[in-house]
Amino acid sequence: MASAYRPQKPVVVIGAGLSGALMATVLGQRGFSVILLEKRPDLRTTDISAGRSINLALSNRGIRALDKIGITDAVLQTTIPVYGRMVHDDRGNTDLQLYSGRKNLCNYSVKRGDLNALLLDAAEGTGRVDILFQATCTHVDLQRAVVYYTKDGQERQIEAEVVIGADGAGSALRRSMLQHSSTLRFNYMQKFIDHGYKELRIPPSGDGSHRIYANALHIWPKGEYMLIALPNADGSFTVTLFLPMEGGEVSFATLQTPEAVRRFFEREFADVVMHIEDLEGDFFRNPTGTMSTIKCYPWKTYGRTLLIGDAAHAVVPFYGQGMNAAFEDVRILDDMMGEDFDGDWRKLFTEFERLRKPDADAIADMAEENYYEMRKYVKDTTFIIKRKLELALEQTFDDFHSKYSLVTYCDEVPYRVAQRLGHCQDDYLMEFSSNLRLETVEHIDLATLLKQIRKACGTPKGTCMSSVKRE
Ligand SMILES: Cc1cc2nc3c(=O)[nH]c(=O)nc-3n(C[C@H](O)[C@H](O)[C@H](O)COP(=O)(O)OP(=O)(O)OC[C@H]3O[C@@H](n4cnc5c(N)ncnc54)[C@H](O)[C@@H]3O)c2cc1C
Image (cartoon, rainbow, N blue to C red; front, side, top):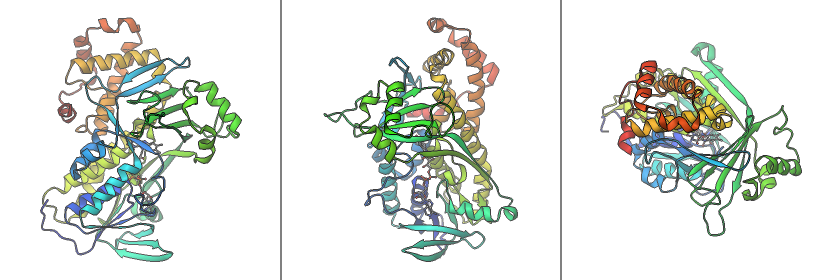
């Protein structure tokens, strides 16, 4: 990392959330002086919820980025491994659908606050990152790379070498770009989905253990809505209800009273409602979150500013990839800077957005599609047969990876490639499975099936080397 280039001015990173704190650490380790602006107080010393969702699924792309700054072990110690989806049907039966046919491949459920705190420690640990809390960026002079912000009720400014906007879906840097959209030919699209979400909690049982199976993402799919529960290391679960905001028979608009909420949960989620400690309290105390996809382009201006993470490409949470993609942005930027970065930010930012934009679009589209899969398909027989075939293929052949694995575990495979191969494999296997019964799956000649998939999809061999090594 020993390049001779030393900028005169600091690099300013806006947002000390997940990607901003990682970005600042990587730049600090390179020897750059970095100012990290964060509008919230320091979450390590103030009791605030860290952000939108309490816990998140961390997987290979994110872990590979954390490897860069050497905090993977510390992070994983705070997590719970999650090996698959535990699907609960209407009669209270459960079915564990593994994420992968390969042993030890899993996602890690991590608390946003714990992870963010470790990243802030890492940033400060470089000795080069100055974090300003309760400092809200208001706008950025894009051409001069001047960042305007308010702190302690005063307006202030910093002249930066370059500005990196890691300030999430409501990005102030992106707002400044929008104000000059015609000069910059800046395209911007934000698409809200009809559903919102509400977080609830299952506390640990008396002896501190989990009240339901710990190593799975629990799903209660109901077609138009669903409930999920993701474990925390302290024995609790964070439960999330995804429901239409309005319209239809049940929506957030119709659940207006504690009695209506209780009735709805007892009718639809009878096998879990008794574990949710303070259903009515949580429901009316916790905010109803909205979810949207943000697509915009370009991500850079004048070689002086760059958007990363949700600021550039927010996605709906149904593939568990928003944070992983944001971390991957940082990993790729750092890889591109290489050993001897010479300060040509314009070239770096241009190449980064060119390479990365198609991948961001691909994961955004796959995340939207996965919502239908999670709330509808997971209890569809054809889908269950298809998943069983995928797992059998993964168990038998080193070079077969389902779409889910390509996205989640194959960090060498760009999202756009995972999308193309994954869709083709999905289409082929869904069609194939529609003619089968569950009992006949084990009699399928897998070698022939794989050959047919190859013929249909042209799946190249050896696309997932790094996750194979991880096992
Ligand atoms: C319900 C839900 C579940 C999710 N589950 C997963 C999951 O399982 N796996 C996964 O990979 N992803 C998941 N995500 C997505 C993930 O939360 C985001 O993709 C991730 O947080 C993006 O990181 P970021 O650093 O870009 O933005 P953020 O984490 O939002 O950080 C932005 C930071 O910038 C600060 N900020 C904002 N504006 C300003 C300003 N003007 N000035 C200064 N600071 C500012 C904010 O306070 C914040 O600290 C989920 C999202 C939701 C909503």
